[in-house]
Image (cartoon, rainbow, N blue to C red; front, side, top):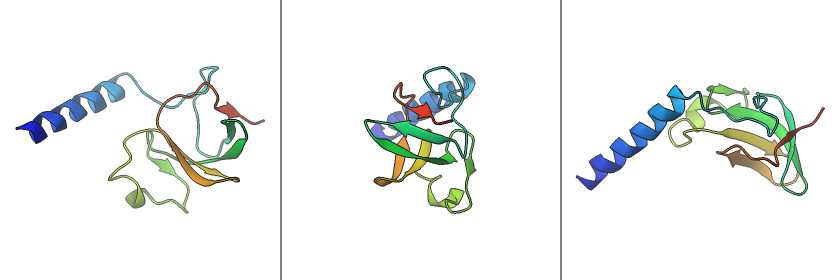
Length: 97
């Protein structure tokens, strides 16, 4: 029964997220998009290589490699530490122009 309740709660959260149009956004309200060059944390820079929310991804990161366990957010390939998964809007995430 506990497993069924946990699954039900996860399903409800996912349904609410979809209904509300949850998408990763920058602090200014603009959407985070595939290919954006970004800066976050004190000194991390990188490129958005996957949007779990929109199921968009670069060829190097096929959907079947992440779809079974990532539920929302974006993957950013950073110069400094490699691949990073961000799940929630982060006020420190900035798009580089």
